[in-house]
Amino acid sequence: MNKRHTDSRRSKRSGSSDLIGIAVIAVSAFFLLCIIIPIVLGAFGYFIRGVVLGVFGLFAYPLFLSTLLLGIALVRDLSLKISLKYKVCIGIIAFCVMMILQLATSFGFLGEGFSYYISSVYTKLTAGGVFFGVLAYGLQAAVTQVFAYILLSTGVIICVFIMLDVFHRLG
Image (cartoon, rainbow, N blue to C red; front, side, top):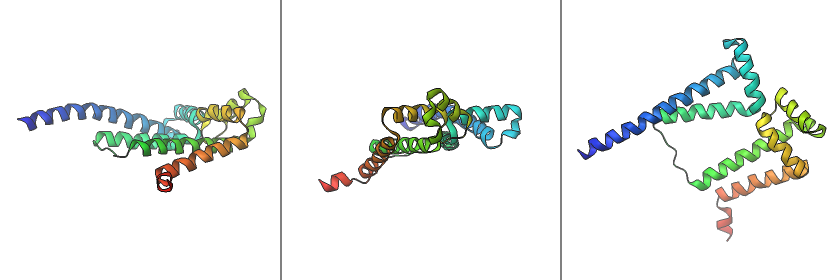
């Protein structure tokens, strides 16, 4: 009897995660279809592709691929067991790498002012589009572009050291 009660609670939980997973899969697959093969949906597909790549840049490809995989994991009721330390470090590394790539791919637009920069990263293909462009422009305006590269690279190195427990071994 206790097992049956546990199974019914699990099925209620998995039912809602199934619906969320299916919704995530549908949205991710739609956007991936629009940015990879826009001709399938005609003018609408090209419009969606332009907006998505303008807002997210090349980051849209791994973003929607990873959300598609997340949706599949939700439907299949899979989970990844890693510690909070690794999750935070992976997130910081991904953010720093994307900021470095955004600064590198939008280097030619940085000297003209904020509105020109945002307009350029939306219309031209950059690593992070407007989403990372706003952050990258703010960072390079607060410090020099060279110092921004140094700061972001240092963040990556420190996170790698934390993940490898280098500081714990030294102390």
